[in-house]
Image (cartoon, rainbow, N blue to C red; front, side, top):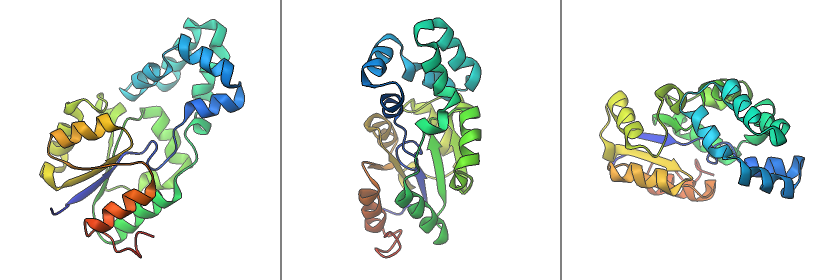
Length: 206
């Protein structure tokens, strides 16, 4: 089926997002496990991704759990270390598609302030034809509304969109709307899909 636009998730597709790995390195696995059991840090991050203030949301959570105050604040203060490094081949695929004239969009659960910061560290975040950032949209994947908003804005038929995301629930929600989807588990498989869809040659996807 023809693809009119390719849509990239960002976390764990273009940039590694592994907060647990960061904390294992900085405070140790035991301390990290205790903190993640006591504090729903991913729910806190979802609040940021829905448009909550980057600093205020995280610092408020830190005050609610004083025994982990310093560690929770690191989610903000050292955020770029949680969201790193970039995934080089995925970035090459993004640029190869654009070089071929294929429209490339981003659809990502990302806060307003955190995305603004990430853009200063990762120049490719400014290279999309359209960017759908959940913080600005005030809704996060896999809520069906976010996919509907993309469709309404870009004006393309759902079945002509190809979307890559690392989370199965996000992929399932897009597929339910008729999108073509790829469950991202690494850039090699994503490259193979782009070649199979006729969007890139094997050499271009290397």
